[in-house]
Length: 226
Length: 131
Image: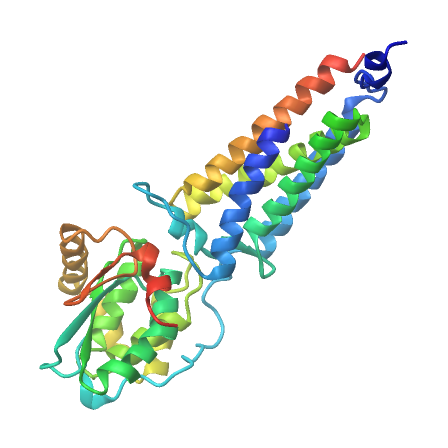
């Protein structure tokens, strides 16, 4: 026997077992995985108590509608968000408070919230409800509570009942939010602003733009200070 | 099988890294990656789904390599079983992308294709050698 023949790898052995038992076992395992995933993952609806935001809303003296900061601040930062977008929640709840403390309160910058409600009907309703809180100066409180209470997309997390519960928690009269939700002008205003955003090149959320430049959604979490 | 296992592992590793780093996967000119990656379906019991995919594809890669290098019939069965068990899960995740989240992540599609092709390869080998 030559050296080459001695070192040659053995041929593939023929499987002796039937393919059927393993096929059935693997399929059952996969289906069990799907059932477990469906039962545990994903939205759990909007029931239960309204969760409080981890930080206080911005100082009321600096708030005007959906803007926070002094009108003469040298830098204006516009943030295009959808209340159902999880990345927007990270920006709103983790990064914006630092921006407000470090730049808005000292007068360097002001933030402007812009609606880009593109994730479905509950995005639109949430944006309308938040706008209705402007009159009572509670937009930012309502904004924070919406982001702190996300519960999936269009699965009841921001249905009317939930938005009214959030109004209670934010100190906004329930009847104000209830009236806004059936106001076609407010819904139209949110839709128009979303269209305006598309016209400006916004295609995902959160997108922020400022006099210092623009940050697209894919870069927001990396470029903002955390 | 080894090639598709390696491809799936690289994709899953990238998605796991972006998830754990708090970043968003790069989509290039396509849209949907960030929406899928940040959806509530991107985690299972607090574990990133991409990490589960990485574990599965690494096991498949290991089994494929063992079959290739050592001619291990058992490893071939493992690769076949893992691929088959993944199919319902991948189908479910694709359904979620299309009909629940409303966005398609190109990385996830590429991962699913790699797993399906790898499983088909293992099936062909088994069918070709089963009496």
